[in-house]
Image (cartoon, rainbow, N blue to C red; front, side, top):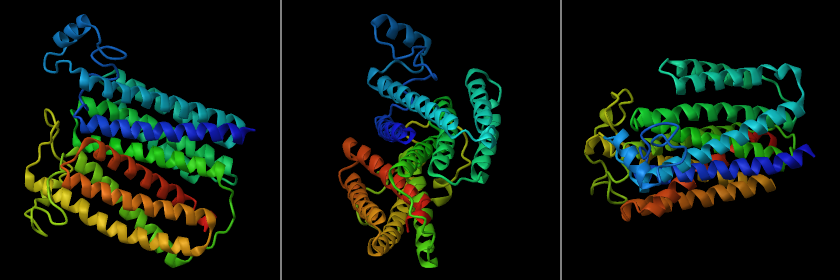
Length: 381
């Protein structure tokens, strides 16, 4: 009975996590990341200023950021759906904790509650509680990693626990995205956090829907391709986030060359300077074209390496004959080809909104599907 209930909950979490990522991509691409200059409210409102009186008053209160209704609603809608997702994840975690009823897990809700308090304190005061929050989250992650599990439901509980911790960290990054005026480091980390939440949510679903086969044999050849593909995928997703947060998607307007050259003039030092100062406002980006070209070119290069690695791994999995892994490997290949097509279209068509949002959505699906399969590889080989 508990498994049937959690199947519905896990599917709801996956769908909502996907919606948050897509809406976040839309918000970023229409330059609405600062559509609400305050956090967690929007011009002091739980929703957005709607009436003429509210808009006038909000403009007076925030003279440097006048109300733009086309940008306020996607930003605040993104926050509200993300908050609903967080509440469902917390509810699922505490229900799973009660059902599992393992005394040695008592410190998980205690640590989670401590993180919640410090995150709320960081949001409501000027004191550096965010550092306490991050420390507690690291402690929390260590506790999850070292805890032994034997059943799928125990693994589900720990995965939900990890997702709950990520949601809290995402809350901090959401706040910093606004208060630090779209600082690329924060925007990139916020995007990666959303991808990780989707990946772990999909892993939770796989624990409920896919029966274990208890076959732990995995050759060194398979392990090499698994680890190489995951490493390249993490690098590529990070580069995609860095490309987006630094507005470098159109630094190379042609394909397959970049500015009609294989190796255009690039500034890697500035392009990958992760210690850049916090500026007044990063909307539109602060880097010059040489730095943006270095970011975009690197994104293309890793895409090529990742494609080769994933194709080799997927072909091996399909030949292996396991029904579940063969189907998922085929789906991964389809997602990879779709993503490559969307990426090329973004360049040739000058980043149309629909294709750019789809590029983010398919990247999330590809990352989540691969990560879920990676986490279960020893059980399903």
